[in-house]
Image (tube, rainbow, N blue to C red):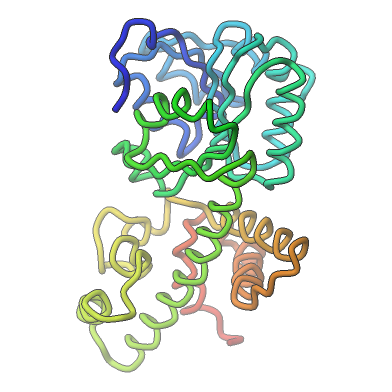
Length: 306
């Protein structure tokens, strides 16, 4: 539950208003938190400015005006720039500030950022999310949180306004570790669902009927019952909208690259994870980079070389 006390309603900084950050910030607004907003693309801030929220010109300016900040950025490079760049958070961060990064980035980068933040007398926690744009809009995200356990309650107050599950994972970097494992499994299961649906359709099965059977059988998974990749099977998912919106193929390829790096550093075999990485990289090279990652179904249908 989010605290309703007046003291808790001091301004919250929010940096990164993309597909996920936008609805997350709106949920904080719904819970009564004034926002200090920044995005590298000014147009992303307009609707917040129109709603009366304060827009500033750099991450440093956010840190100057707020002592609780959430960042939601696409890559490790973006996160490092937002925190450590020339106009980054660390230029003006106040002692005792709570900095929560909900980006999905390399766990090693999270650990380095945490060290830099600690030197400034502030607290850093990694809190990547699962659930996609739909869960971001409805406030039902799952947050996987890494950091000092004593600070978890303070983070939970904010994250609970945007998610229905806020899970403490351990030290800084463990939130990222959990997210990377989840997204590797998601990629593998989405490819598997796409292959099974494609095979069934080519064997003469109606796709809606096949999906229904899969979802009452042992092959059922999130990719089949909540985010089916076949156009016409489900409403309200990217496959029903020419794979627009949702979670981009480029981002999935990025996350699988993080899994590959982690697997190499820990000497962990990820045979299917590595193959999924190659498939999504190939999709990026063949025009699918801006489409949702469930477009792997379309890719399999059109790719004659298999």
